[in-house]
Image (cartoon, rainbow, N blue to C red; front, side, top):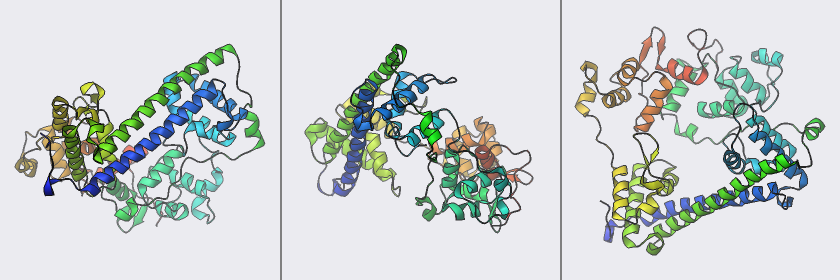
Length: 448
């Protein structure tokens, strides 16, 4: 059970608590920004003042895009889904869609995303085909040439400034591209498969992990034709007005929700900064402090441990079996700290389950009765190969192996295991990211 009082040297480090409180302040700030953005979108769709968004043309773009979301042929958005998409940040976009409606280029960028169109026209295929011989490749040509096995990752990184295979994968995804079928050489005895294995196994060089160079989804070039493709007056027929009103109502609801979430973050930060009354009294605050210390200590060495701890205090408590089911009526640790019963739920959630017997993990090669949990630990420790792991656990695809290890706090083994002649786990991981090649992947002939 959590302690109800702290005293003397037992009191949590104030700097640690302030680090988490500052992360909670950040959460409150962008929750409020989301609330303001959602409220603006609702007002504009209802016919209110459009000047804060950029005027009547911006209103027309927002209304047109919203109607397209609701009418997508394969998977139309519901009003609630459309509202959430419009005001929230999106991994493929540098700004939330509502903010991008200020310009034609921004609106077109969002349209191409939701309608599954490439962000830019494909590069000249003759230049891609001859990329290995060209010394003036543009950045976009380099991405296309790498995805088509025309150049190696060292040259791609030299042109783009990207330094890690993770950043390369992210930039390719933004362009509707994938890793090439054949990994390319990066040095003596090393190729892209080694970079990917180290990246996904959490063993990438720290300098590469901290690299901030990135290439977000490209922006279409402005043109008269693009301007002409977007209306400057919002649709005003009865059907359109009714549809837009439904999304506006959903945006209003989201604005209220985000404001409430911002206040929860403010409340939690106040509790960490000594305001016990804000969080339900001294006993509740003591529980929050204890949980904060536990989460921060578990994240030792992780640059994101303070934001992760802040989110833990706020997010709905979820069970792992079955995965992602919500416990305790949807409350987070912030609310559950107020009662002994709620605190007991959090304590149980934080209690790590006993791991497999270390002696059985060490001896796994010689055991015929491994449990799935023992198999996961034995594979991560390099005691068994991936073929046996997948046979014991029933996992069919190698990408699931990586995900299941991560859920257990485990990593891919340092040394990839044998799969077949001239193939090992690196091939399975590469194919799960790049798609299967017609023949077994092997390093391309291009030297770094």
